[in-house]
Length: 510
Image (cartoon, rainbow, N blue to C red; front, side, top):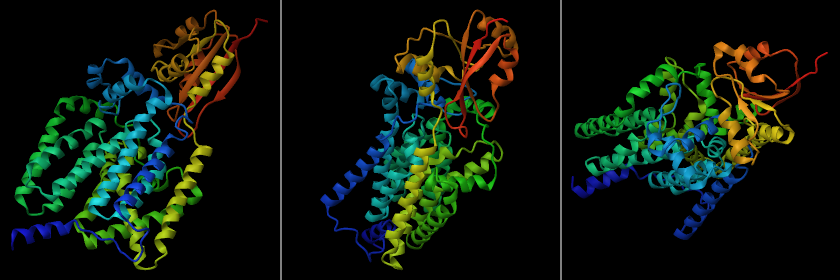
C-alpha cells in the first residue's frame, strides 16, 4: 500500500457524511459565517438577558470574597480542607475582578464569555469531525440548553471548566489523527493537566479521554506507549497539589449522598431539559434518549472511533463519577454540564438520521427539543430563585434604625460574605450598623447575652439547608428575656436552601 493510499485510509476514518435527503439551505462560506454569527449572538443574548435577575448566592459571594481579598500570588495556594474545589478558580476570579470590578453583571460576565466560546468550539469540533448540519444543530441546542444557560449566569467555575473540557477533548481528537507527531501530544498534555486544577472531575475527563485513545490505538504499541507517557506527565503536573487534594478527600468531598440509579436518570434529564416540570419528565425521556441512541448507533455504524469518542465524552465521566461516589459520595448533577456539548452533538446526529425514514421527521424532532427547552426556561424564570440576598439587604436598609444590630447567626461565617457584598459594596448602604456573630459554639449563651446587651432591635440573618437551622437550635433557646419576633421573611427557594430574616424587638418591661 502506498503512503498516499495509507493516508487516504486514515483520513476516511474521520470523513462522516450525514444523510442528504434534506437541505436546510444552500450553504456557501458567507451563509455559513452569517449563521455562525447569528447563533452565537443568540447564545450571548440569552445569557445576558436577566443576568442579574437573581442576586448572587452564598457560593458565589464566598468564592468572590476569597478571590477579591487574597493577594494574587497567594490565590494559587489558598486552601481549605473543608472545600470541594481545586485552586485555579481563585487566581482567575482575582484577575477578573481587578479588570471589571465587583458589579453583579460584571463578575458573572466571565462565565457568559466562557459559555459562548464553548459553543463556538463545539461547533468547530462537530464541523470538523461530523458534519456541518450537525454542527449548527448542536450549536443551537447548546445555545438554549437550560443547564448551560443557568451556570453561564453564575460566577462558579462550571462554565469555564466546560470550556476547558471541550478544548481538551478537541485536543484528544487532534492527537488521535496523527499520534506519531509528538508536538500534538505537547498540545494535549497541558490542556489535560489543567483540568484537575479547575475541578476534580477533570480526573474523570482524563480517564474518558484515555479510554477513547486506547480504543483508537488498539494494538498500536508505540502509540499506547506515547499515551502512557503523556498520562504520567499529566499526573506529575498534579503532584504539587496532591497532599491538599488527599486532605480534602478526607474532609470536604463527601457532602453528596449517592441515591442510586435515580441519580443517573436525573443527570440525563438535566442534560436534556434542566428545570423541566415533573409532568414533562416522560416526554423528555421519549425525545432525548431515542435521539441520543439513534445518533450513537449511526455514528458507530459509520465511524466507530467517533462513536466511542461521543460516548466517552458525554456519558462515561458521569458513570465513573457515580461509581466512585458509591465509596465516597460526591455526585452533584450540576457538576456535569461539561458533558452537555457532546451529548447534544450526539442528539443532533440522531435528528438528521431520521431524515432517512421521513423527510419531515428532523423538523418535528427539532421543534420537540427546542420546545422542551423553552418549557424548562419558562418554568425556571417563573418558579425558581436562589437566595435573595439583595432583597433581604434592601429590606434592612429601608427599615433600619440607629443602634440596630445585624446578627449573622453562626460561628462558621456562612452569611457575612453574601451579606457584606450587598450591604457594603452594591447598595451604597451606610454600613454603619454593627454586624456580629457567635464565634464560639461552646459559649453560645454567654456570647448571645453579651452581643444583645443594650440592643432594642436585632436583625437575625439565617442561612440553613437540610443540615438544620442553627439559629433555631442554638440561638432561640439562649435568647435573653424580653425579645419578641416582629418580622419574619424567607428569601429564596426552599429546595436549594433557606435564607431567613427575623427582626427581634425587646419589649418594654411589664
